Amino acid sequence: MKKFWRKNRKKRSIGKVLIGLAVGSLIGAMVGMLMAPTSGQEIRRRITGQVKGVQERAKTAAGNVESRARELANQVSEHADEMRGSISRRRTTPESVRG
Image (cartoon, rainbow, N blue to C red; front, side, top):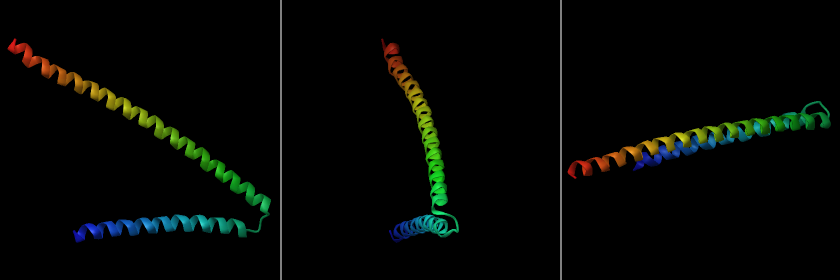
C-alpha cells in the first residue's frame, strides 16, 4: 500500500513541476514582452498575432481529433457488426443441427 502512495505522490509532484514550468514560462514571456524596448502598440500587435496563431492551431487540432474520433467510431461500429454476425451464426448453427 505504501508503494502505491509513493508512486502517486511522485506523479503528482511531477505534474506540479510541469504545470509550474508552463505557468512560469508564460509569465516570463509576457514580462519579457512588456519590458522590451518597443512601443506598446507593437507589443499588442505581436500578442494579438500570436493569440490568433494559437487559436488557428487549436482549431486544426480539434478538427484532427474530431475526424480521428469519427474514424475510430466507424471502425468500432464495423467490428461490432462483425461480432453480432458471428454471434448470431453461432446461435443459429447448433439449433439447425439439432432440428
